[in-house]
Image 1 (cartoon, one colour):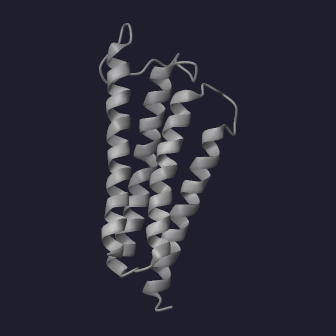
Image 2 (spheres, rainbow, N blue to C red):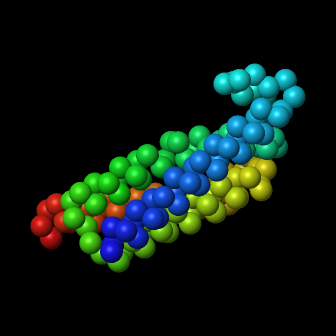
Length: 138
């Protein structure tokens, strides 16, 4: 039961990344002068093409590590409601991060999306700690 909820949360995360891929690809391809596989170095946060590309890249940079932590936790036998909660929190955070990246064109650091990125890091650490506790026999 726990693993089912965790796997559904992981499914939501992966579907979110797929949506980001489609959005980034569609808007990049529709941009004037688009070259396949290349994004203009002149683009910045004022460009939706840039923000869509960075949203997808951010997920490519962060989701595999979280997915690996989840896999480690499953294989080590983590069976807690907290595990489910952290996975679903991460799934929701990635969606909010995506929406904020699409909606807010800012060079400000930290930006509003940065806080959700940090919450994702906390969720990742929490899952790793739970796995370590089970592995250590705690």
